[in-house]
Image (cartoon, rainbow, N blue to C red; front, side, top):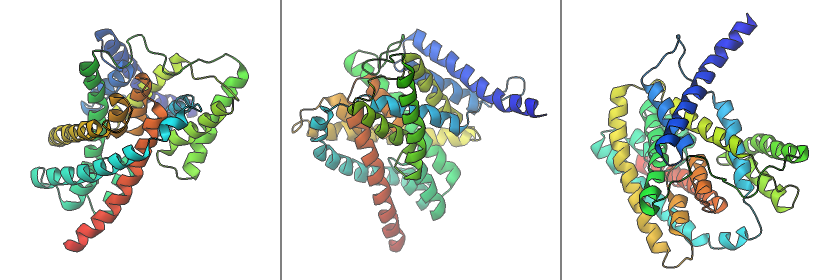
Length: 358
């Protein structure tokens, strides 16, 4: 029956959201940074890896649902756009050179780690080493004959470890949590309550999501809504922003979506990949900090803004951290998109050269 089929399809989603909510509340109560993102990710990820079933139902979160909330985050980032942003973006050329250096060194460093220490075959080691472009790395690796199972897990691990470690790094560095337990106002202003404002924001999310994909923008489901939101805020069509309750829900859905992706992986595979991932992420974050310290000799930009801008995590997740720190999310997101473009371009050329060398 259609009704029962609908219920059966919704149960895994409801279970995922329930686990994410429990994780978010517990993380908030114990004082974790970014509690709703990290709590949801950790609890749903653990339930997925443990193959937890409740009344025969396993947690699962379809990508289309996650994409809707990623679009909400894009609208939220765009709401931070104002004319003064151009002054900061005028300084972006030097950090962009730093991103180029970061990508080249990270790719080489990770490749040697995965090839020599991890024992991966060449395609799996190479595309697993990419410090950006999750979907692109998996697609390119599959065409090159990589073990896509291991490659996928290695790339998910990179993103997971970065978004888990960054809030704790800032907690240790500054003594302040990234996002309060009660939730922080991630954008200036707030929803005005006028229906026209809701309509404008909804159009930015919907049209931006579809248009971004049609134009094949990098991180399209985030960048498309962000560009439209930036435009409507810049031209004064609205000054509204998504309400904090929707932002908290978006964090939980994004965290749960990341955790649910560990479905189908074996615990033995996970142990090896997580160990290699820990070393890889530690090396990349150390490289990140080193480059940032060097750049600060020439730039009048805060350490936290630059550190997040180079962090090899997902664009959406790092944007959420930047928003919570009020660390110029437009600047951070721009550099992350550049990192993805540079990573994909360099990796494509470098692997062909590597193959010719035999």
